[in-house]
Length: 429
Image (cartoon, rainbow, N blue to C red; front, side, top):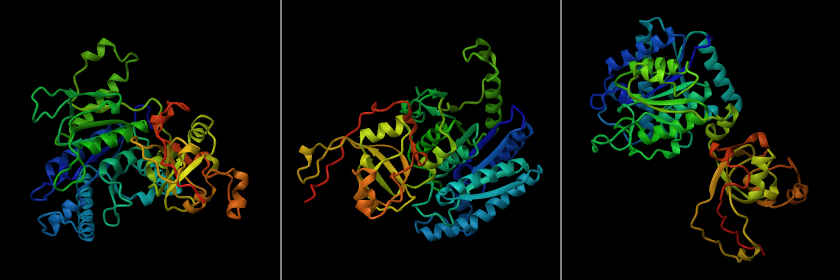
């Protein structure tokens, strides 16, 4: 692969490819997307499409006017529509002699790390074969517990999986604005975002009549993408050619060692877009999988000492550092890690304490014991596990390589975050 070759993920929402009223495919947009992908490939880049639209196309095929509420009916329409959607993509790309492949995903498909690695290997082979992978959520089988929630999130996870350089989130606006441009004529475009936490734009949480995503889901996707080292870009879906022009512009400015070089200002301006800069310390593949590929089945409340040992000394999680357990889960399942203050003996008065501040989730872990077992051994030394349970599968509740922290906590250092207290458990008689 040439040094200038990039891996680019382009996410298209249902409203970008299917008319909201007639449910007919918007062939003009689809054709422009195909031409854009072909141009990117001629420049030596590898491209993945994350394409919504199966339900919308299914509605048209079955002459159904509105998206139903009944889940099995939605899944049946997705099954009908996915065939026609892929047939449409395949037909359009075939005119330019570009082969495509269908990849349907749910969280269960990447819940196992071996499957996650296999997915990475499959993408790599498709790239080597000159194929454009077209990814969609497997709406035919997915239920709420295993859905990514929207294809914005799916596209961010896909971008992290393929170690993409750029993730383009195509939407109905050119970029983010300081206010809603439809209401405020003084709204200014936000062209570059270096810290997503500073974004306070007026964004809508609702998607289109057919889709499930809105601008807020794109902010979430941008946060996921940038945490994995992916430059994430929002631009207008009705102008797919923008993607090629923006990539060309970004390649040009990367030739300058000084980002403030005045020569950069002399370059032709790219199409309007919002660019979210990647993290300076991107998380690794397995870390991303632990944080975002798995659905947590419960929560472990750990104390500050355990948190400091995990984050600072890269230690594994001992039962002595666990204060509380929430939810029902088994061995080798994922859980949330929440840091809390250990209750003082004076607070253990048989009543739960109430605190105004919510406990802070700091990461995820795959546990060596189930919730019932951890409830028994929490607060104990590892040497006491066998006496408490009658057996000892491991000295640790979770091994360090099965623990990942959210990026916000990496630079805080041990003891830096302020954490609230866990409601004290009733005193045991």
